[in-house]
Image 1 (cartoon, protein in one colour):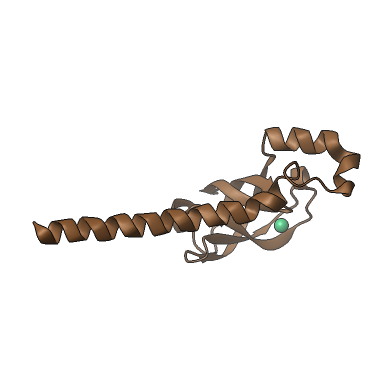
Image 2 (image 1 turned 180 degrees about the vertical axis):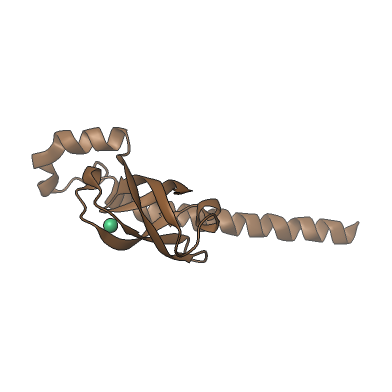
Length: 130
Ligand SMILES: [Cu+2]
């Protein structure tokens, strides 16, 4: 029984550490991601736009070819076509994505994907092979 308790304790600690890691990530991103939390003079000109974008995350759709996946970093690199919603030309770039999405594709796959736009980058929220 003692061994079981020790194991449960170790798992609880691991879970706490993982939670802390996620928390610090979110905290680190919050200041730059939410301009309302740290008003800057430059934001005044586009106050209306910023308010609108903070209420609902801006999304976009893209398509392209996966050139690399990095399960450790949690990124999918895609050579994508122009993405009008983000005013991006065609380029190759790495997107953050949840582990199940990262694991669902490999280099060379032609894909269509949904993005949440943030801080000049994007996170893939859905991806499917073409
Ligand atoms: Cu891009």
